[in-house]
Length: 157
Image 1 (spheres, rainbow, N blue to C red):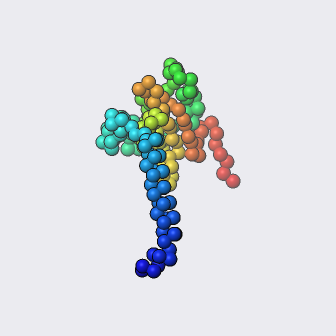
Image 2 (cartoon, rainbow, N blue to C red):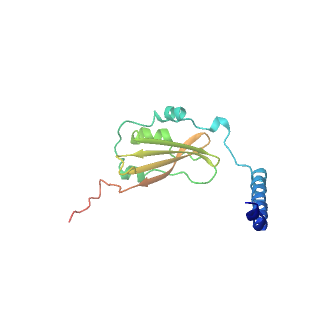
Image 3 (cartoon, rainbow, N blue to C red):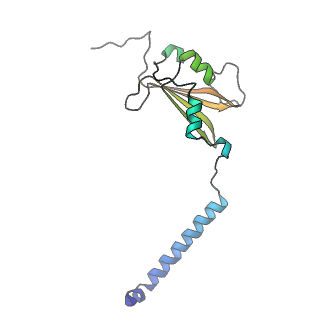
């Protein structure tokens, strides 16, 4: 063992200095650029998310009419809240309760996602997103997976 160490002393010294340099670099990264964490009051617990979701979720939900979704006004990044933007509670009141509810609270802002319809391989036919602005969630995105319309019927060949 001693002979092996003597023969590989130079390689071991280089490996040790590289490891030390790496550790110093990692420490400097975390000291200079600390990881941003959310304040404790903005962290979501499972019980809080479950509590928040109860008013928006039902055991089953139907797919909203495509025409109703297309007529809605989405949030625009203008900095000011507009009167015609659709709030989360107004959307659920108009369309109905969702099948799923997900809430994220990040350093970039808060977001709620509602899933409507019966999921196919975990994907809901409609996913509706709301972004938080001025302590209220506003409609920001509508995503449809194979949407259906009352005005358009596909032909089966």
